[in-house]
Length: 233
Image (tube, rainbow, N blue to C red):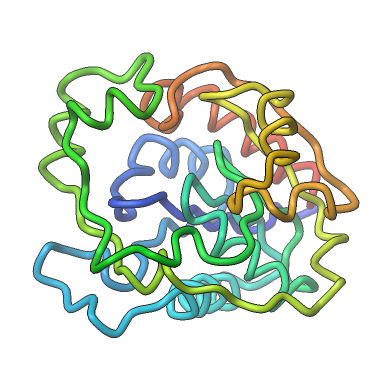
């Protein structure tokens, strides 16, 4: 059978370049791969003033349809909110859903966010996130190329009404935290995990490493994504 296309969506502050080690490796394995740069995330000069969460959802939906569904959608970090909304919008066009150190978010990430969400800087990032295994050169590139996230994306909420999303085969690749830690966090009411307990087919895969496994363990992440996509074909 033909492998399904794979759509790779980077997390906050990132563009398609974040997948530069994973995307070519997947293509070498026979997959048609699209790495996205979401609206407002192309450069510091982008106009982000009118961009909201729906714009990111629409961009991902467009990429899935352009790739020729059913597709495998992999979202990283904060784009779990947009990713879960995509499963609500086009569940029949997704062969599988992958959350890379992310989760099925519902509601606003932060309704009180004022302005765009700026990159916090490497020092603050090291205080708040797991950077295990990421070299300094990559971290410096991250800081140099980071783009603020449109404030509307962080403040917005999208009503999810299509229960068919609950049957999209989904996988959480747990890297900075274990599967149990994510499950425990969901019980505490974190918005980025609000949909976790309602998904009917959800698998956890543990890959202990940084919050950015595409940089700290790209080979292993590639193998996991390829395995999920192959099984979904």
